[in-house]
Image 1 (cartoon, rainbow, N blue to C red):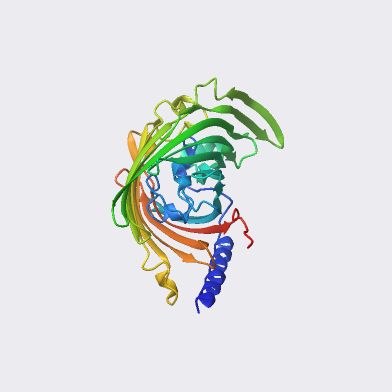
Image 2 (cartoon, one colour):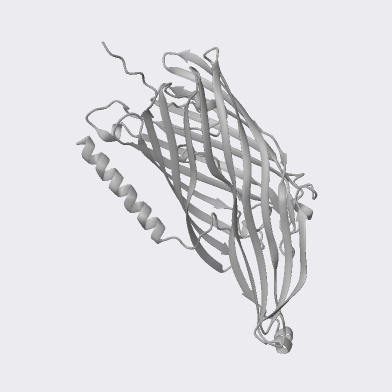
Length: 438
């Protein structure tokens, strides 16, 4: 009976994936008018396991799932096992500003991570995941009758896309049974395009095409620790902390402006600026967390994360502070996250759904920038579960995030209400078991 349920789960998941792909609107890593600023929307770290618990993970030690939000957590594992995780994300958003409404959907792979043991209580991990995403496309027409009377119709169009990815390699070790420490090297890379067009219907006027093509590179490190204190029985408390170094951005920004008339293109501006010379920086980040768990029955966790982007250099750099839009200023981002997991009976051999893990969480995020002096805040709730598949700790994790960014109190702000669905595939196998003969 359980095997039949597992097969049905696999078929249902692949049907959902097929539906999400068919519903995909565009090829954006993310889609939001707020991603026009800075390096776009900062992606939340973590697998489907983390995302369905509000994004917590700093104090998580779970040997059945990869938790790369804290490099020290890689040591919480079966000592002979290979583990991998990759996930898919479908993001559905409804935008509103005054009486204007629109909607957009995106579908992407959001991470691939694998880990295996090194020696005794140490372990290694490597992965690739988005760090930030740019995605927007909006247009308007000139409505001033005096201008239209002289030039004819004018259409303004702005669009952007691209992502900054982070490839990381890290390791952790457990010391004195209770204390685990870890470190990872992170390499940022990616391209961001932000384009603005002004098109005239009257061929007597030259249409203008301008924008920035940005190439981003960077290298930094992240450190983590976790301390687990037994409380009696299967109960324990874990305290965790992480710190990611700020780093200078490398790469360049190509700023251009072309005029087009009757298939004749004139270059009005074409400059290339190096990001390091402009003093561009990624913000550092510190996170702390505390969790309480009762063996593999249940766990609860609370995290706080703070990242300082006030010296990023975005405010005065073309391509990061978009001219003609709201006044942009980088600041300190903060996040509070909470999550809870419950498993009725992981070893139940009769009832499949008693073996499943059920999760919920909540979060409140303050973005790394302000617009016209206003903070851009997000809040939401998450739900999720993991469906066991076959042997060991293989499973399919499903998650849902329901939230809102910004509000309509300020007429210049755009409110976003969204529902995100994540699917994570947890792959687990014993690779390092020695065969013994008698």
